[in-house]
Length: 109
Image 1 (cartoon, helix red, strand yellow):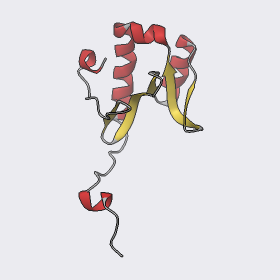
Image 2 (cartoon, rainbow, N blue to C red; image 1 turned 30 degrees about the horizontal axis):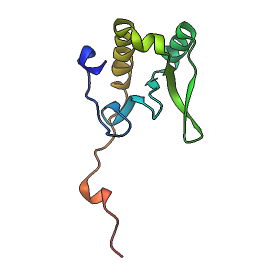
Image 3 (cartoon, rainbow, N blue to C red; image 1 turned 90 degrees about the horizontal axis):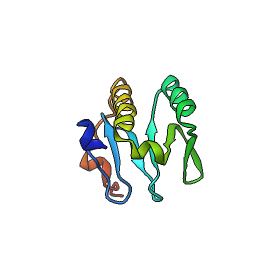
């Protein structure tokens, strides 16, 4: 899907995901279910058109994410349209600051 779109790159070894400006907007969970992060209006449209629902991870509902039904995953052209819409929308969000190596290491006591 990512190659077909040309937007983004797949990250994550165990759970593949895509992000833009530090904001994740699509991923595959451990069961192979795809999820897309969409704006409120796009999310409502997507869920209505594709009988989709919310996404839960670790017992919590992920705000803004919708599960992608297998039929849509199989239709690359239709999926690419939604993936690209998610890419465009996530690009409107303020970029997250990059994490530095110092921020990733525990502080010395």
